[in-house]
Image (cartoon, rainbow, N blue to C red):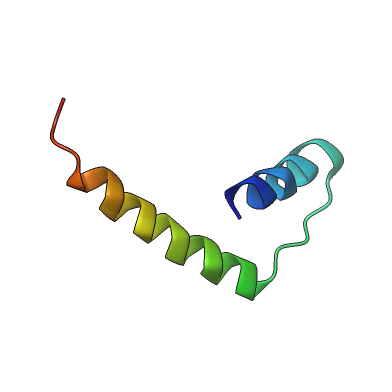
Length: 45
């Protein structure tokens, strides 16, 4: 999912093609929140 979103961002940045659906945005938000919880569980460095 993160790779797909990164590729879509690159298409928008370099080729002007922006094709992001509300569903894709919602899935990215969910995954980002899950990733944040995992990272926050690590002890501070």
